[in-house]
Length: 378
Image (cartoon, rainbow, N blue to C red; front, top):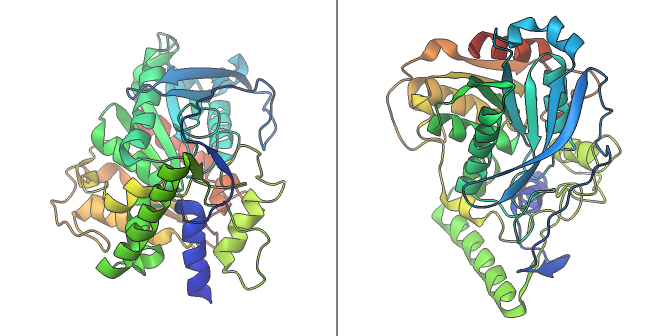
C-alpha cells in the first residue's frame, strides 16, 4: 500500500495522467494581484513591491521584491558596501508552489536580515506568463533563475558581484543546475531538495529505475498528448491528494498539511489545487541535469531535515558535488576543485515540509543562511 501511495504522489506532483480540469492549449493571459495575498504576514522591516522581468525565452516572470527598510539595513550593515549597493538573493520553489507560499517567506525573512531579495513565479505558473499553464522544463526553469540574476544585476541598489540564490524542494535541484551553469551566482542555498530529473525518470527512491517502467510511463504520456492534440485542450493531473487517505504515507500527510490547510493553501498554487498539466513535466523524465555540479567553484549549502523522505536527493547531490561519484549518478567525474566552501546540513528530527515554513518548531536555520550568504557574497 505504501508503494502505491508513493506512486500516486509521484503522479500528482510530477505531471500524471489523470484528467481533471481542462483549458485551451493556446490561451495566453497575464495579470498580477496588487493585494497582499501571501500565506504569511508582511514584515514591518521590509519594503515590498511587485515587479516583472523577461527571460531569454520571452516569458514574463512575476515576482515580489523585498528591500530592507533603513533600520534593517543598519542592523545588517555588512550586507551593504561603501557605494550603497547591497547583496541580493533570488528565491523560488517548491516545485508546483508559488511566490505567495514559502519562497516568499524565505525572501522576506532574508530581506529582514539585510539582503535585497526576489521571490518569483516560474514560467507557466502563478502570475507569470506561459501556456499551457503549469508546464515545466529543465532548460526553461533553469533560465528562470538566470533571468532573476539578470534582473537583480541591473538594479542600482544591488552589487552585481554579490548575488546568490535559494532553491526550495524541486527548485533546489534547479538552483544547483543554475549554479553549475552561471558563475555569477556566488552562493547557492538548497533547502529540502528534490532532483526533479531523477524522480521523474526513476520514480521515488529509484523504485521505477528500469527500461520497462520508463516505457510504461512514456506510453501513458504519449496517450495524453494524443488526447490533447485531438481535443485542443490540456488536462490537469491533480495536486496533493484530497481527501487524505487514512493510510497515506507520512510524507503525503505532510504535503497535505502544508498545501491543503490554511498553513500553506493558496488559490493559485498548483500543488494546492489541480496540479501540473498531464504531460507538463515530460522533459524532466529524459534529463539528468546535475552532472556538472562537481565543477561548481562558488559556495553551496544543502539543507535537509533528518526525517525528510527527500533526504537522499540532497545527500547524493552533495556527495557527487564533492567527489564526482554517488548513488543515483551514472557518471564518474573529478572531485570538486573548491570543496572548502561546500556544506551539507541535516536538521535533527525534522521532515521535508518543516523546511517550507519552519513547521511547528520553527526550524529553518535563518542565522545559518544569513551567515552563509554574508560570508560568501563578498
